Length: 373
Image 1 (cartoon, rainbow, N blue to C red):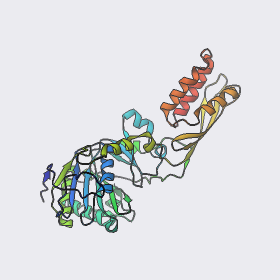
Image 2: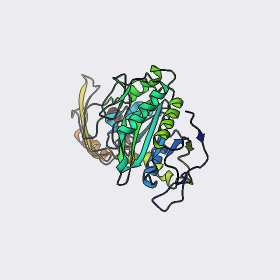
Image 3: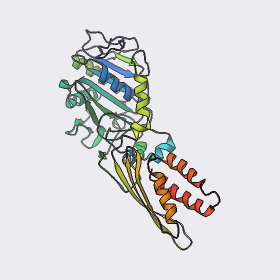
Image 4: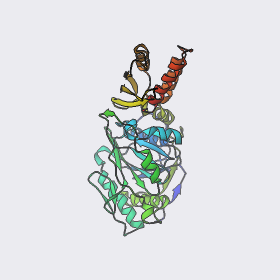
């Protein structure tokens, strides 16, 4: 089935709050298919929550299609220091986002489709949504072996994960969103979703590693564009609605009042890092010395992304106890991030400008500490 695309405002949102109508929804329309024109993860996540909070979904389900530039998206209750390679992400300028739903960490790029199914809470059904995706895939390639699992994943050939699921269930509305691997960079996925850090203890929700595969590796005809059209067509047929895909700009305040403040919140350090459940880090590293390598131990407790306790233990002949105590107290209350550590190091170095040997030791210690952030 040919799916028609349109940028014309064709539905008028029935909003729960006193905000201007978004101009998309006709009351007679039994459902709606949207596709974001943005590839910014924060804008697309913000739009998800805008729809969840503002749109009357009773009898009017919504399917939202979106793709992002390279980024890592973790679940609401996860620890980024456990879930991903933050140092590599900083080097490669890969964005990190925390979504408002649960579940594990995932890698997004333009070879990955994101699908969000909006319904009322009473009509929320993840398995039915996954079956809809399977039917759409089989409409393109009838011999494709894709099955949903009890964990609400999709498996290709019984062993390769091609889709993972997360959800948010509110008082009235709910959404189920999932990924679909078409042609994603599997090398980037593997390297970015692997934390190099050891010694972290946390009650945060851990991700479950899986063997993945791209649909395009199975069949070159299974491109993102083809699959989005097929899923939209199947969704329209199932919900007896128009198969128009309505292109929308999630940064448009005239359509989505207040959306940009939501974007800023999702971008903020307080949300991305500060919402991490309390955790501790215990690390041991070695520093050079004239006779031999010395062992240094660091214990850190982090709450709301801020260092709550900090204890560095080093041999007294290498680092005088009073200096160690100064370091310990100086870190408390600062953000658990390398930028903050660098600023703190520079400030401490200015307290004894003539002691070059001490400067050298502080720099070594702080470089090691930055390595666990």
